[in-house]
Length: 81
Image 1 (cartoon, rainbow, N blue to C red):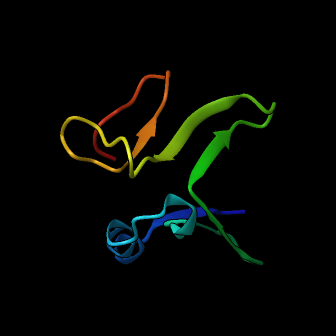
Image 2: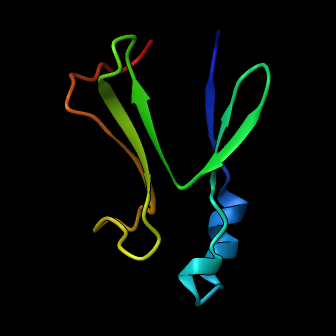
């Protein structure tokens, strides 16, 4: 089963104008054939349940480059496809 993770930039922009962090909408959508799930952080796991990557939304503490959403992993990453 294919699962897609979508980052909604419109939600991120809307959240910038909201001063109360508890009112932020989750900008990450996890989509598969049967549902759409919304989240602010997503853990990607292998078949044994080990975390292999994480999608992070951090509007209050962005990276030094200004990114508010990024993917983190401890594994090797290859460019291209």
